[in-house]
Length: 285
Ligand SMILES: NC(=O)c1ccc[n+]([C@@H]2O[C@H](COP(=O)([O-])OP(=O)(O)OC[C@H]3O[C@@H](n4cnc5c(N)ncnc54)[C@H](OP(=O)(O)O)[C@@H]3O)[C@@H](O)[C@H]2O)c1
Image (cartoon, rainbow, N blue to C red; front, side, top):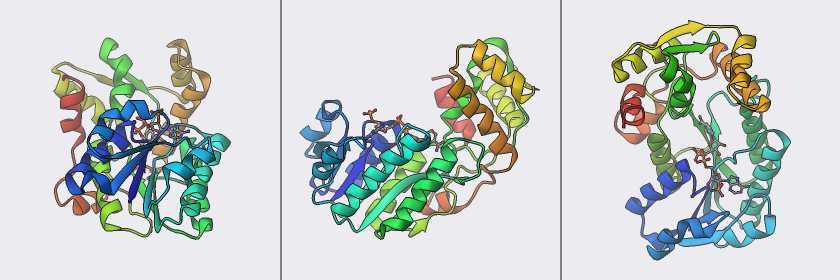
């Protein structure tokens, strides 16, 4: 049995949708913090059990009988993230799964200035130490981040951001299909190549694409890291989130989120979704 965690989230739910097309419902199950959110899946014959990475006891039951587990990284950072991921890894090992599949990130690294990246690197270390076969999906940067970065610009017409580097923006849908295929066919061992969208695009390119999609100009303006942080704080973004966003730009300048890699389209056997295609549905839906 395949168990999918994070199944109430954007990525995990798309993995489940994909698995429903590949496997009979009784061949996989989900582990979620609040099973009520997924009552519809239970009605379709999918096993729905409560599993919270913060409560190891709940994971024992949620992972029971699993041969493969998809651990979707939690929305936490630092020690808290590692603790949650370690609990999930330990529970998967205790359940004697044959393979753990983990949603890591392109650019995962201990010295990255973007806060989630050292967490992914530390989780990959924990996976190596666990002694169970694992696949670490080095997912590209979500294209869904771009509308958030554009939020202010949609009102002002100016995308005011720090100097950046090109990012290979990647659609959830493609990453979910890649995860589902990897779970079913055990396609990779260890960290995968970067699973990315078809092109690495910098903020100037993002502004160009957004202008085309919206039919009005979005101007790209480069500002300092400090001014960007100040703008975010003034706009009500909490300090930790503002620091994380500044770190995102610092890591992108190092080239951590590019270039595009052919592994994802090759795995999907079709072209990956472009940023422009993604923005055409998400910005002007
Ligand atoms: N590649 C990228 O660019 C990128 C960008 C942002 C984030 N990420 C990472 O990718 C993950 C999945 O992305 P997403 O878009 O699907 O995020 P999402 O929609 O926020 O979903 C996160 C999922 O994690 C679950 N979760 C959170 N804490 C948990 C815990 N303690 N125990 C068990 N499950 C827990 C949530 O469950 P509930 O419904 O109970 O809250 C939810 O199902 C994120 O959590 C984050 O680590 C990647």
